[in-house]
Amino acid sequence: MSSVARRAKLIIPAGAVLTATVLTLALAMPGAGAQQVALAHGKGGGKTSGTKGDNGTVKIHNSTTPITDRRNEPHVCVFYLDAFGFDPSQSVSWQIKSWPPTGDRTVVSSGALVLDSSGNGHTGDMTLQNGHYKLFWNFAGEHGFAKQKVFWVSCAAATPTPTPTPSVSPTATPTPSVSPTPTPPTGTVPPSPSPTPSPPSPAPPAPAPTPVPGTLPVTG
Image (tube, rainbow, N blue to C red; front, side, top):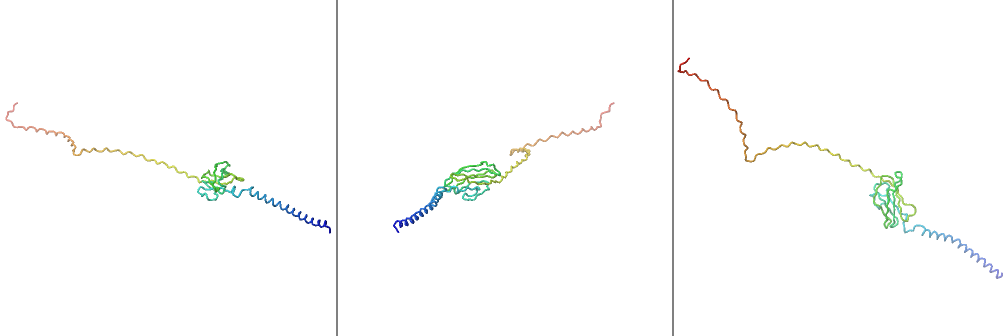
């Protein structure tokens, strides 16, 4: 066999090996590129693992419920709003709207607050007229829609205090005053009243003269 033929046989297998290597790399590259894109999206396209973002939640609490309680209480009278798990020092604004079937979607209360370093916070106590309401909780950096909660306010009707009936006091009849009898000074004897003089008794009639036989002659 000539040296030319021998070289041709060696060149063909070497070319085949080179072609196969190139094809292998070409097939592997899309997968590698897709992996890099996926990693880049996971790192920068979504939320970072260091922030909570929309993971926070807000609850309706009765005024007597502790702020650490994570239950939601949709039937209240005096209440407050309690937030958990948002980003540290996140700014929040909220609105409460009257909601069907008892309301007309008008804003009846609103406010704002800054959460603490743990992403927690709460409002002060409040109350509304009896009815159905909806809370809209917006915050800086939110993704999507506001946090929302529907709830009912139902306070017992106050019992009116009865007005006391004024009592009529009877008019007192004045008692006639008795003038005290003056007491004579001690040691002084009051004068006795003078006796009324009796009329004088009539004098008895004088007796008739008794005739005395006389010595004088009878004259005619």
